Figure 1 (tube, one colour):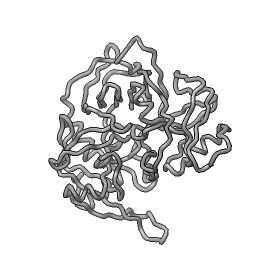
Figure 2 (cartoon, rainbow, N blue to C red; figure 1 turned 60 degrees about the vertical axis):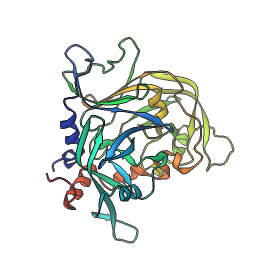
Figure 3 (tube, rainbow, N blue to C red; figure 1 turned 90 degrees about the vertical axis):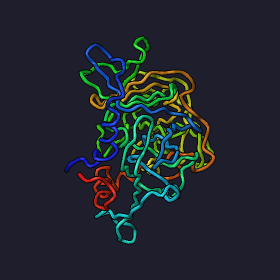
Figure 4 (spheres, rainbow, N blue to C red; figure 1 turned 90 degrees about the horizontal axis):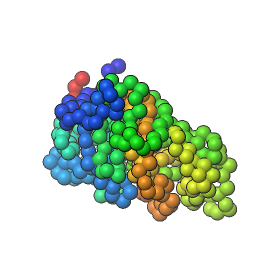
Length: 346
């Protein structure tokens, strides 16, 4: 089956942004061409980009934890976006009927330096916090390598040529860097997932731009036999960590925020989430061809230990967003969009 996810935002961004210019090479013979460059502003601890949907100024959060672009139902209505319902065959709800999903089509999505026609957004019932209309999901960045430089206020997508196994740490050759192998990314698993070590024990970790804070799930804490005290088990807690290690970077005698929820609540079989606090304190480069995530420490506090005071402050804003991955791949989403008559034809 053709990868229909590349028929909409991915192909349009790659074509429109391909002439954006070239970056410094990571090493001799390694050429990086900037395909997309997005100025990023941190608002309330989350990365935001300015955009226009059908000519209306909006703000979208950059979300490595959303598999697709999302918009709130109310905002889609306010923007006059055409919305359509479709059923996902073979997916059944508790009453035996097929689950309903909704998609809203933007006639144009204008990002800095590029305007893309006919962009689909999945529809979310509740509003997003922070005054944002919706989320730019992983499908918006899946056509190249991605550099995350939140301290510098930018995200770039690159086409890498001739880089082989060269370390992709072109921003500061003198700085020591770390790298980890990440799981293969495709329509079924588009997220940035690897392995970290806490007190010497391996945990599956996901890198999340849209989580204000890094967090350890409750079942992850149980795997580590951490002492969380005798407090309320339904409350957020802080755990003392002897050693946190990801790649070659190790932090000793630190603390991590422990969620009251197991990983199933977040819709992912992941023990640890490294959030926007980690991204703000590091410069990162995701090499898809190498299946490597490179990063260097930029400065500042790595872990935000401030517990959420409301569900909307938690990752997914109190919803198990990544759980929708089990219901629909990006390719299937685009296929249903096309069948509904909203999207571009293959």
